Amino acid sequence: MQSFTEENYLKVIYHLAEKTETVQTNAIAEQIQTKPASVTDMIKKLAEKGLVDYIKYQGVSLTEKGKSAAIDIVRKHRLWEVFLVDKLNFKWDEVHDVAEELEHIKSVSLIERLDEFLGFPKSDPHGDPIPDKHGRFAKTQFIKLIDLKIGDSGTITGVSQHSSAFLKHLEKLGLTLGKQIQITDVTDFDGSVEILSSDKQINISREVAKHILISSNGKI
Amino acid sequence: MQSFTEENYLKVIYHLAEKTETVQTNAIAEQIQTKPASVTDMIKKLAEKGLVDYIKYQGVSLTEKGKSAAIDIVRKHRLWEVFLVDKLNFKWDEVHDVAEELEHIKSVSLIERLDEFLGFPKSDPHGDPIPDKHGRFAKTQFIKLIDLKIGDSGTITGVSQHSSAFLKHLEKLGLTLGKQIQITDVTDFDGSVEILSSDKQINISREVAKHILISSNGKI
DNA sequence: TAAAATTTTTAGATTTACCTAAAAATTAAA
DNA sequence: TTTAATTTTTAGGTAAATCTAAAAATTTTA
Image (cartoon, rainbow over the protein chains, first blue to last red):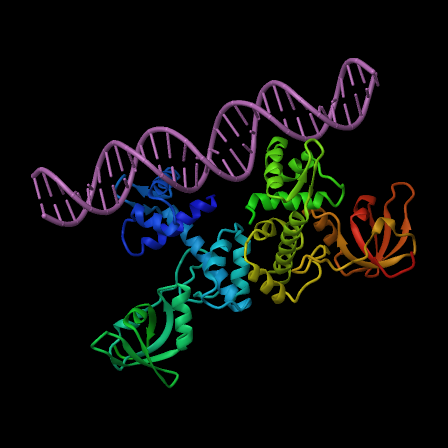
């Protein structure tokens, strides 16, 4: 069983490992909001417990054991987010911090019953996939909106940026999960994208377009 | 803002203070499952923070500030218990430990929304009253089953013992919240009580009768 | 490839919540 | 009311997770 703090490290390493094979001390420190020296200490501890592979100065990666523990936390986090949005009417930009606390509640039957209560959801309010109790993710085919060509269309099924500011912005534009969109133009000047959604023409910046995930149903 | 541990101390002191005016170090130690020396340390800290009144060797009591913090934790605990039983189908004897963790989640809007989602319940699955967000309890008039006389009747509205063993026992006897009962006999020999509930004659020990709370609707 | 910059680690402290053992105060018993 | 028993506190220490400052390793740059 891991401590609250150990769980946070595992989760952060898990997410960082999605970008780079082996994860750097500084990157972890930034995420955890702590100093690199503290990270080194904790990494040693996790390595001793067999949760990470660690070579001095070379960064860390999760062992199978560590990965499975991390996925379990991700599962809890995302299920709680669904609960907060679907049942308690939180907005999708308000749930992260609370879920960050709830994810550490230790009770297997709590999570299984919650999962059932929510109808075994496959993704959280931001479109991120929820692993099942064995840690298996349903395969999903996402493409970034920025990578679509003029004429392509699809459905918004996720975001790759979870800041409250970004989510509020999307909400204001009416770009929420499930919305159908079609690319109508791409501006040469700044790379901003013109899209058609709910019969409205919307212009979104390149930066925004990068973080909207589309499940494509048009030609690519 | 209090730490997880401080919150536990406040809660325990609050409950112990229901029995004795001023609470003893040893009593707290037993509840928290720690040593008296540790309790003394923590009490000093709580006293410095203005959460308890403390005179060396004379025991502690909660200040208004401490009491209000404690009631807030009790409120969260009981609301989560309702959630677990009503929504996730936990049994009333299974919820305590999980609620013990959930009660420390810090988010005002979470609890307010949870309260609303649950329909502003007035009592938890054991019949204990749930304070409102201002810390006010609805007045309830309980009498212990053991104090009823032959012929008296009433409704089971609470229990004053929360051990899993006790609750399971009541469940097996069919004595759950809301059940109507009538006293039909009291055995001289061992003080056990004969009651009529759902057209069945049930004999319960004096010990069990002490911990069943009745809202009376018969003559007393 | 040597110097500079960056990243990571070590060493030694700090804080929180514990602990044990012994001393002090209080309460109960003879 | 003195002794004995109990309760509570003090003193000094430990473990977890953090910190700062300085040293060591790695990477980048010139």
